[in-house]
Amino acid sequence: MRLRITFAVVFVAVLAQSAATQHSQRDVQIKKLAQALVGTWNISETDEPSPSAPKGETYSGTEVWSEPGGGPIMEQFHAKSSAGDQDETAIFWWDLKSQKYLGMWCAPINDEGCNGFEGLWDGERLVLDGSWVFQGKRSAWREVFTFPTPVSFVQTLYIGDTAAELKLASTIHGTRVTPKNKP
Image (tube, rainbow, N blue to C red; front, side, top):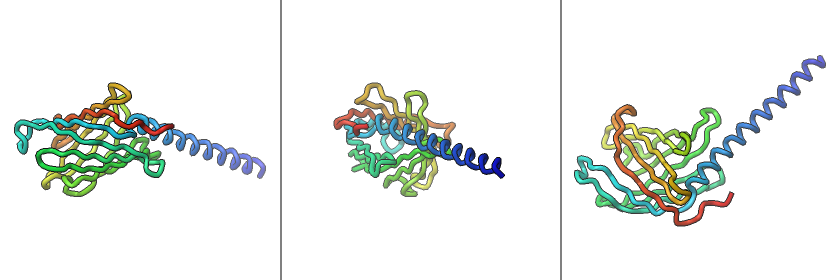
C-alpha cells in the first residue's frame, strides 16, 4: 500500500513538472513572437504581376501587432491599393499539443471569411503555412518573415495551387514606428 501511495505522489509530481515545462515553453514562444512583431509598422507592399494586375503594384499601409489579453498575438493589416482598401486580421497562439503556432487569418478577399494556419521558427525566420479560397478556388499559401534589424522585417507571400507549386505573390517591407511591448 505504501509503495502505491509513494508511486502516486511521484507520478503527480512528474505530471505537474511536465505541465509547468509545457506552459513555460508556451510563454517562451509567445514572448519570442511578441519581441519580433508587437508594435506599429509602416509597410510598403509590392505585388508581383498577376492576371488582375499585369504590371504588379506597389502601395503602402500599416501593420499593428498587439497582445490583446496577454496570450495570443494579433495582427491588424491595412493598406490601400488600386483595388481599394485592404483590411485583414490574424491571431496567433502557441499550441502545446502540436508544438506549433496556430492561427486564424480573416479578410474580405477570403471566400470563407477566415482560415486556419500554422507556423514555426526556422532559425531566425518565421514560416507560416495555410490555405484559403478566393473566387471559388482553394490555394495554398506560405508567408516567411525575416528580420534584418530589430526595427525592420521582410514578409514574403507565396501562393500556389498546392504547397509544392508556391510562387512569389508579394513582398512587404516593414519599419517599426512604435516600440514593442516591454517584457
